[in-house]
Length: 411
Image 1 (cartoon, rainbow, N blue to C red):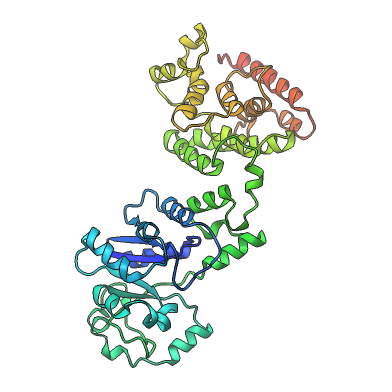
Image 2: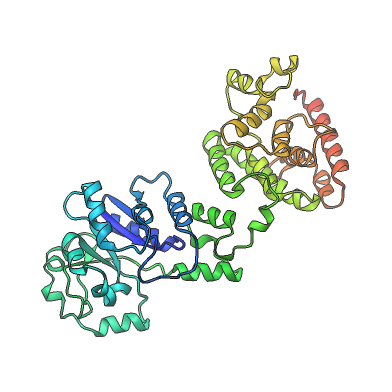
């Protein structure tokens, strides 16, 4: 296995980090070892998330991709993190084929000689110099002006200049270490930029991987204020939970049914805002309501039979009617969701109920008349603009019963 080490504060991890890692992989490495620092010697006192938060954001950002691993060795060691210690630790445990690659941004070249045991780091690794400086920036111009005097003295650069993914451009004159230069495009994003955008309430969500975004929003990191809206929710880490369940729905349902579930979730969220309910619980209930829709009859009966409610003769005859009850059990047992209203909303979305909670009425409405239900009377949808929740709910129930009678379809 040909491994490369990419370390940093990752405060937070952003798409630029992963874009760079992709370039290293494309240049011939099999796996990238992402190593978040406990405390960078050059960033002492830097603001941001805890080491554990940064570690979790990295893990959430590379889920399902076996080309990446996240190593917590520097966090476990605590204190100031020195790259030379990490290199020896990685080599001892991972047993890479040959020297591991060590990715350095070209913004670090001028200070590399200040790193602890920099010469030893260069001896124990294949230094990979990645482009981080934007063309035309002051730092980039300074580096270019320094000339290429060191290039002639770098055997590694000369030997591997023609390898896929590498070039041998001009190098600052004071960087006298063997190295290769990565032929990577620049995605000009910085962690500081992301933090500043979050703090300013500016657009930032698509500068970071989705998993990291969920953690930032759930934990109110970097001054993110969206968590205030979730504070009253009884679902822990609601954004993370929603992403997990939405992916489960996408993998479980066919595309038509998943699209329906997402339309239901979005409509439910809008209705929750109108009727004073938690919009994120509404979205979660909407995306989860059909989780068991395509489950076989035996399995759906088995799950629903554990919810403490009697299975009627009609449900025994047509087990598909139990898919809401089964989904509620699945949410509680597999995903640890215990919010009473959310489970009630998912459980009774098929049949509805006058005495159900407001969220349950909202999910029933959203499920029955969301935008992909092309046969729905537009005037019924118009009720969302002016009707009270109970009147709207009863109108949708009446409309649904009439539609089923007319079509000869049993609930």
